[in-house]
Image (cartoon, rainbow, N blue to C red):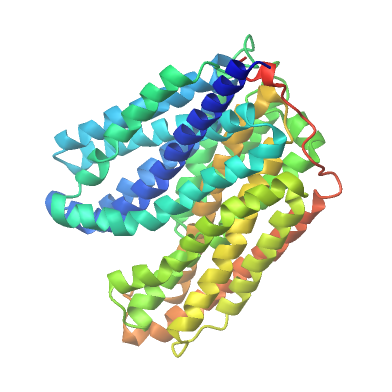
Amino acid sequence: MTQNQEADLLSTRRSVLFAATFAAFLTPFLGSSVNLALPFIGKEFNAGAVGLGWVASSFILASAMFLLPFGRLADILGRKKIFSAGLLLFSLSSVLVIFCHSLVSLIAVRIIQGISSAMYFSTSLAIISSVFPPGERGRAMGINITAVYLGLSAGPVLGGFLTRYLGWRSIFLVLIPVGLAACIMIRMKIKGDWAEAKGDKFDATGAILYAVSIAAFMFGFSKLPSFYGWVFLAIGILSGIVFLVFERYVPDPLFSISDFIRNRVFAFSSAAALIHYAATSATGFFISLYLQYILGFDVRMAGLIMISQPVLMMIISPFAGRLSDKYNPGVIASAGMGLTAAGLIALCFVTSDTGTGQIILLLMIMGTGFGLFSSPNSNAIMSSVEKSRLGVASGIVGTMRMTGQMISMGIAMMILALFIGNKPISPDTHDEFITGMRTGFLIFSALCILGIFASLARNNKLKRPAVIYPDSDLRK
């Protein structure tokens, strides 16, 4: 390779990492900022709790429905095309927030943003895997995942500042220039498009079945334990079974069942991700309520206490990513899940007399575990598939995350409904809340222990990444 080619390759990798890192920061930052701004949105539009819930839920549902289809489409048409189109659509849809004068119009914009996030989220890890060789991929993924935790940490702080002094619309508008700059940089600096599945036929019927099953399942889980929740959950499961049966007989399936069954590393790594997110995502929900209703902290102080977890995630993730380039990523991810399980088990013993320092310590333990798990597990998934399926693998990673988050919140809401019902959290229901919260942590602990076994089950098959991409292939 000549010196010019080497410089071009290095420039491509830097540009890809910048664009992917910005995309990774975007969704968690906006999500945590919007959640904080919901009271202001509700006041302007005179919206109730259900309507405000849809401001957040519509984004999650739309994104989850399209993650896998766009991942597959990116493998066929080109990952750069789908990624840059997603960033551009997100930036343009953020402009539309200026013209939102009703809750319905805002929810419509959030649906568009959910679809656009599926476009760049389903391709970001695939593009990183396309341009970074195995010995450097874990470090790049660690930086990428660090951006996720940076977004989670910055959202309550920066988003709160913007909402208070510039209005809630400013949290959308401030991201537009960076998004457009990333689109221009991708256009100018990145030459490759990485369409290794070019020529395959897109499975449109499978994509529709998949979207229906994911939407029904996630919507149903969010409505448990109501009757309609169980109905939609059953529809989601049944349509998911139909989707899996249908995919067995399609020449170019959206999701290859046989590859999933044969690829033990991919199967167990994906299962570990689903279980880990299902076991951890609602802990922040419980802890936030505990700090404010039981310990009496205001929202600002509660946020500062809770930020200890994502800060540790942010610090640990790059280190864990580098480790996964040198050592078995499955072992590192399993150790991380073990730490997370230890933190969850300790949370089962929290009472109204538990000190703030102890809560912070447990959040930091869980943050360390999460940081050790995420980037090595993603590295294991992306290194276990062929180049022509990288977009699908990236979509699966995102789907596991969002489905796990919805399952976790569904469990939490079902527990609160059983222990407290429709009564508000007040001094009269504090004991019931703590009992319910501890029950939730017990369920999450059991899930996390199950996840450790799923994570360890792949390790005898997991070696250093075997698929090496020659430099000459990076531009294809």
